[in-house]
Image 1 (tube, rainbow, N blue to C red):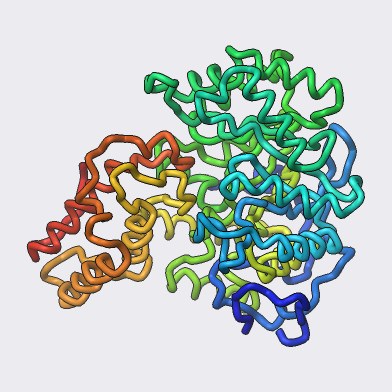
Image 2: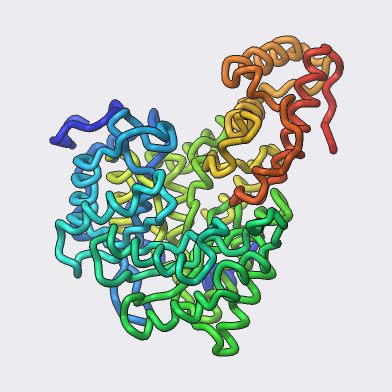
Length: 494
């Protein structure tokens, strides 16, 4: 078993919604190859003998960009969880120091094994991702990789045309390139606030960030000049915005060369049931596919949730494919639809990179019976009613010091492990009650717990999953207080 720490210079492999058949074949394709695949798992304790072997260098599954005819690796390297010298990623250590030497080695390894799509943003890794990505990639011939970056002009100060133009120019400088292969309008569909604090819905935010200031027209000009080779957007939330952008595409007002969406076997049918402000992937993907717009996939593991499923679900998956990691199911699922151009994975550790390469070198597509199986698994997960938090930390810092992600993690963990107390008459109630309360105090200091939330709403616009965070915090607070009073705990509906 590998020890997950910062790696030494030498990596030693030797030691180491329901669809019918016609719709399934239309979306996912009709061929299935026979090789067993294994994907990266964010649960670092789960490894297999197969994962210790050197993956092939010449078997990466490639997809064709219909605009350029270029071959793009099905595995895309997400540069949002880069390693730091303190260990782990900058998400765990916001003040950490980027480990450029390790990043260089991992990028070298990725390129050597056929990965050629690298996705970054001015907003990633405390603003350091583009610089680190540029340093690592600049050491390779420019025709060996495609760079995707974003106009992450979330702050009202960046909405004036000149400010957004400067953001784009700085991206080129940090990435050490004259052009970007894929440029995204970042996070369209998310609500925002203007400089005066006035709330903007998804459409209002789109207009303020990209339309009213003339920025989108300017970006189109950059595509004509070759500074941007493919123009697209990453979608988060408001389906009216998604539909509007595709209507513009149909009308010829703006042309989208690709679109980045969230797709995994849970979000395929349950995204809008888990959160009404999200959109099911089956709709997003099909709307793009019928226009021949390639999909770039984010969140194939749903922030790690699909690699850390409850034990009974793990047992079901292992019974079906004993050699495969739990995460491999999600990666294979995300890569199977034929109009998917690439699947992004944020890879901090070399283990993640190696196993993801193995999954897609080559891909074993999800067969129809496996798809039905995963739809059953999705329903099992949905029925747990967990809070759909991906631990992205975009909601942080809370102005009142509440540790929002840790509270959600603890609550979800109790559900997944079957330890959430729900009935005082249960023989397990006292044990479950103690586990919840003691675990809460160990995970989150009292001054950072849900009871201190004043429902200011500062966190809400920043959540890509569109979670009503104040509502969920109130639910956890009421639930916790009921436990402390040792009363019967019922479902909390607010």
